[in-house]
Amino acid sequence: MKKILVTGGAGYIGSHTVVELVEAGYEPIIIDNFSNTEERSLQGIAAILGREVTCHRIDCTDVAALRKVFEQETGIAGVIHFAAYKAVGESVAEPLKYYHNNVGSLVALLQVMEEFKVNKLVFSSSCTVYGIPAELPVTEQTPVQKANSPYGNTKKICEEILTDLATSGSDIHTIALRYFNPIGAHPSAKIGELPLGVPNNLVPFITQTAAGIREQLTIFGNDYDTQDGTCIRDYVHVVDLAKAHVVAIDRLLTDKAENIEFFNVGTGTGNTVLEAVQAFERATGEKLNYKIGPRRPGDVPKIYADVTKATEELGFKTTSTLEEAMKSAWDWQMHLQNTSEQV
Image 1 (cartoon, helix red, strand yellow):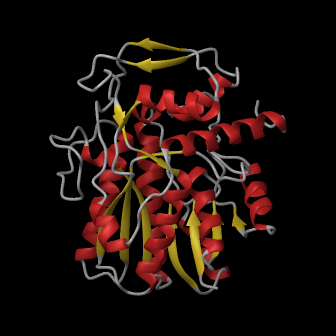
Image 2: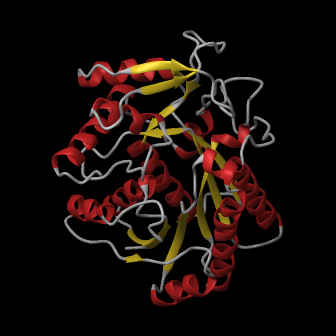
Image 3: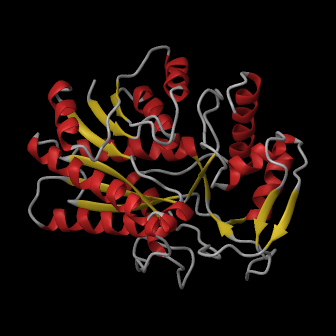
């Protein structure tokens, strides 16, 4: 079984990818500092797989600690790099924290990868690099624009670092996956999105409101140029997204990838925030208490993916519907409630 190092592997997308890697015949090795997740994610992974997955509790900005992991875990075939802070609002308030962690961890990781001659990397990027696009849907050729936040800028800078590395003659081959909006949870309801404190993302706020943890959901703005006035996003089931990482690692390990490649990972369909709320209500039978509030600074009015390249070159397509993703998110919320694990 080929070892795949998964940084941030105890997090939301990372934990689902770890499960999919095992099911595809790989041996994932997790690195996580647990700054934005909890021990229960490892317990959930173990419950799904019927065994524990190796986890090193270190910070990815620590070169010496990374080096120690590469020394201990001989034969690492590739790396999937998730470890990053991702709250847009927090990045505006604490930009240095985001540049140090998001950019610093990538640089440290690349240095150690070169040192140990590990040359396959899947990088967790974001559709935020497209900014407010002039045309929709966005393709991988859509111009990368000035970021709306320090968080978005860290993803843009990381992509530039990886591009510079690819043109430098480095042996490292990278596939950067530009995610759209990951939602949902594993069908077992044993792992899912676990925000610490008040959620920054829509779906955990929806599920926590439906569960009575939050009093009301606020939809930020209903005067955008969309069918119902609310923002449009491309909501992709997290299990589909996790599977895209396995496909990307497969491509790298069979030497089919160029020095650097970029792929959108979305459904190819845009849904408004109100449509997402209605899909949740249809999927669960729960009525949601929500109100319309003012626009939120920095929100992109509408964005969704053209997924032609991922379909044709990776052979990858999403399979889950918006309703299925919403139902899985609700099942996960109910699991948290029933096991009294959520504070």
